[in-house]
Image (cartoon, rainbow, N blue to C red):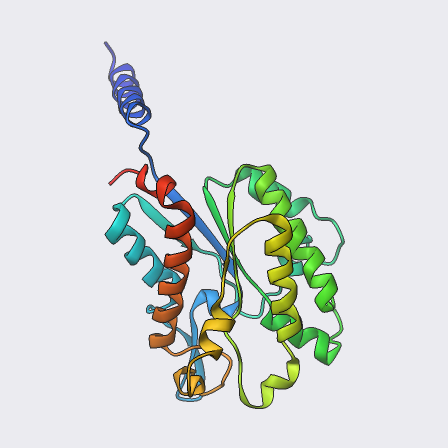
Length: 241
């Protein structure tokens, strides 16, 4: 038996063993803006902190369900939902379809709204201007396409923002997000709602009043963990350790 054939037999046996006990890696693809990436305002500069929500989320999930859980952070500072759906500079939505077709993730996390509201408020040129209603249509399209490729989907409300940037008026986008969640029957993490309910929540924000502090990122991770566990604990438990 050649070395290549031996290697193939070993790999086949390994795959068979995983299939036999229903176990395998469980991958979560997290898409969003700078608050997904983990940006934090520090010393007058924006940095990406290692203590971001997705890093904390992975630790929490691995602690409960095993080391085969992987959270891939696809957060992009400044991103809005339209950039995920459409190919740059066009209204061609095939990019998201291709990405979902090629993705090995079982679960998709989506966290957009802050930049969508910001660009619409300033009527920025060279961006896809998303009214709250257009944002809702885009999120709906993202969810439907992910589900068409047999992905589990969880939506995330954005964290609230404070100070001068409140004028961007993010709340109508949060409302639309929740309407999409109801219509598409997918879970939503109530980040905006939960953080706003806390007294003096602004003190947990970074200096720019847009990005969370590291402690607030950890709180957001806990809320996301709770929603994922409550809705997909069975699937997570079937992953390897």
